[in-house]
Length: 200
Image 1: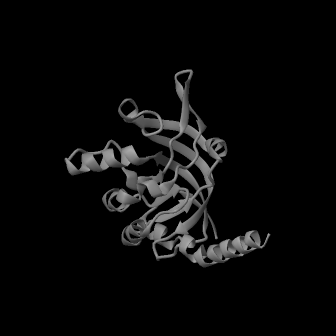
Image 2: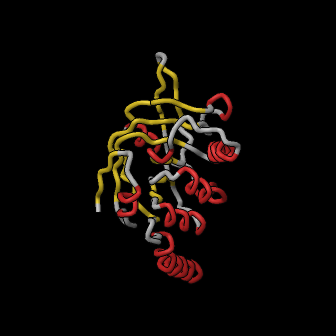
Image 3: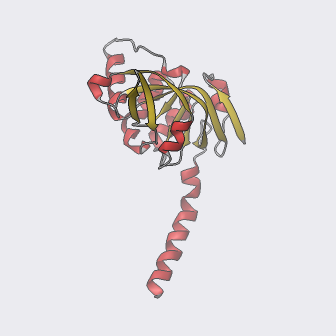
């Protein structure tokens, strides 16, 4: 099902989303890769409040290319990074900050799946290599945190987006997981390809 969503969304709306849904987002999304995840968790553990509320936005696993032009930030490219890198702490991040939507590529593991079910959130896949296309959906850069501390790709960037997508829901809060659903088909395809290779 195609869904046009305006952020923020509440938990009940996120729990309605299902594997296979295609989303287009309007509102504010923020980027966070490894270092930003760890920094935010560290701040939380030491009692330091974040300068923003992740639960009101979508989390984008992205290290964007941003240029300052005429005193304003301009996004050149904003492609997704490989999400499995965040698997070791994404469950804790979800339980702590509760972003309702994660945007990334390649899927995540069992720990994240369990956290999605617990907090009521979804993981969505955005096509890798389409960073320039993603940038066209970004209307403006609303701000950036920890740029000096972490550098451009690892900083938390805040993007005002319009119809950002298409995002394919591949892991949902009901336990749906497209990656696991496709595993038998992929294994059979690999076996058939190897058989053809060995026959030549």
